[in-house]
Length: 49
Image 1 (tube, helix red, strand yellow):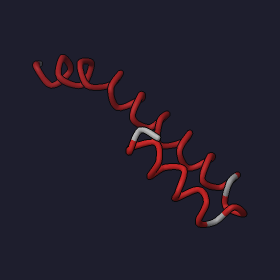
Image 2 (cartoon, rainbow, N blue to C red):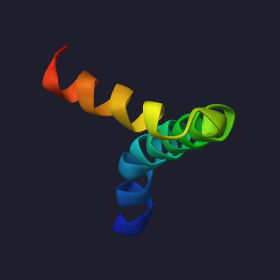
Image 3 (tube, helix red, strand yellow):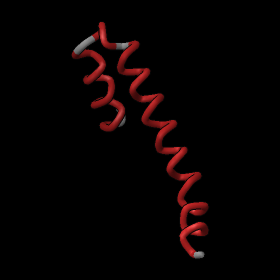
Image 4 (tube, helix red, strand yellow):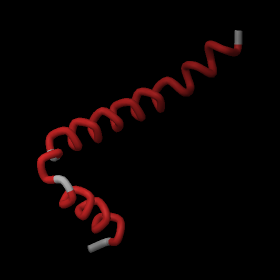
């Protein structure tokens, strides 16, 4: 009986995670032609530049 409650608690987080993963994959696919500059953009994002 408690399995249904656990699934309903984690389902929204699972859906959010899948949506974020899909957005990241689409972004990588669209910017694939830029190559290394995409990696530089991500590194600068984490460095705060």
